[in-house]
Image (cartoon, rainbow, N blue to C red; front, side, top):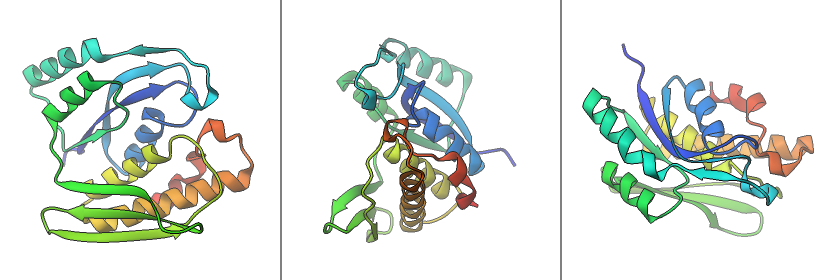
Amino acid sequence: MATKRVLAIHDMCSFGRCSLTAAIPVISAMGFQVCPFPTAIFSNNLTYGDYTFSDFTPHMTEFMDKWQKLGYSYDAIYSGFLADAGQIAIVLDAMGPRQIIITSVPTGNETITVVSYDAQTTSFDECTVDRIPFSTCGTGDLFTSVLTGSLLQGQSLHDSVKKATQFLNYAIGYTYQSGSDPREGVQVEPCLKKLF
């Protein structure tokens, strides 16, 4: 059986655990091939306040045209950071939403909720976890990576949202307890074992 492929459309930060550097190990650990499609390349994540970057927009359609010519296909498309309206148009050309997830819904000072809607089953669900008093970059990238991997493993949208929410809550808690610099992102490496 061929390994399922995920086209991960996102920026690449060379320092700080976020973007493609967060998505690639998580989706790979869940058993899938990640095909990175950078939207921009950053020297480091934006939490440091000082960075340099290169916009990849001029090359995105060239890449897509080449992949189409070569007959490449993907089992899932994951979209993260999009730098401008041009990139949004390119990505919307490749995908259309059938499932909707809203993260970080305020439900009080002590909890945070993620809401999901599946158009195929016309069902809503919620997953609530304790709020951890810690803020860092890359949390959405980790959430979306676990969600994508879970969906490709055949789990329902709502079960995938629960798994992603619970994993992210564990990883944020681990990072918070470690006392690490929040600018470095979530310490995902020691937490990957929780995905199995």
